Length: 126
Image (cartoon, rainbow, N blue to C red):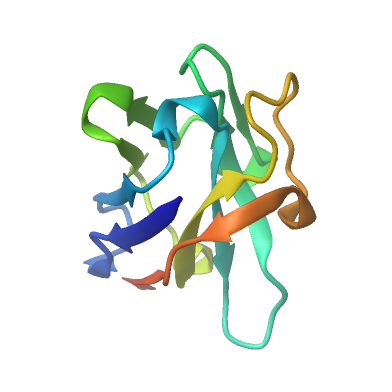
């Protein structure tokens, strides 16, 4: 699966952005998908995941109620709607596809994702 993330940018605190991950290659609808982020000087961290059929989602606690992950299997795309953005959300955001086809459980572990996009930068100004 080849992935490309875009939609990042500069936004003020409280603003919104919508990230898109466009997929090509193998059957997108067979893979759980995730969003991760990496802030300057910090390790990459899990943000959200969505099941291959789109029926299950999983978020890190700090983004619950503010971020929404979704996917459109017909168009090979995944999205991350980010509302009420905070300066601590500033990071490079990466989309990723699970290494296992139709894994039963959603995973927050980066090691379980075998395909990665190039990242899109999100900057939230205070």
